[in-house]
Image (cartoon, rainbow, N blue to C red; front, side, top):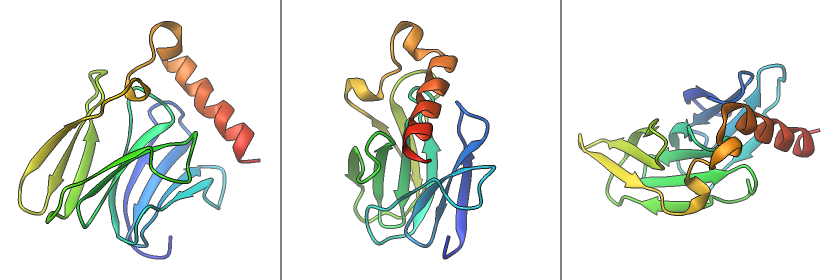
Length: 150
């Protein structure tokens, strides 16, 4: 990063993959055995205060900015956020996905408020059956990384 790093979060599906976010307007995905980031994500020119992995889908994570933007990213298309939401007039400080299997996240802001957001759409739900297991999600993430980060 080219500025202060605000958060580091390990993938819940793969023990050598982690995300970071920074004042340099980016979130980055890393492998612990590499010096350079695997991928860099930037949506708007603003400090990224926090990142959080989806506990349901190994290729989904969220990021938040100091001007109130929530970005939801999917590694399957890392060029732009899959979806986003603006909470105007707020500086977002922390982000967390619910761990109960539902596509819900909460964000905290500079005014002391917490906002709960439900992500709509099948892409954010835990896959049914075998595809939703820890092993299947880890395999999905590793397959993506092997294909796209040689």
